[in-house]
Length: 57
Image (cartoon, rainbow, N blue to C red; front, side):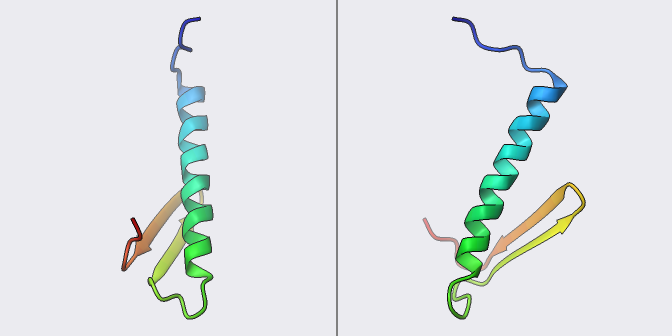
């Protein structure tokens, strides 16, 4: 079975999926009591900005 050809629609879907994954993870981190890791998430339309002062690995 061959890999799908990447086109603009598929690339957009992949990118949106990744943004939603990070949004969910960072939102969960930020919802911890007192937000001890300093997680911030800002959305500008379809663009998202993420910041975590202390990134958990």
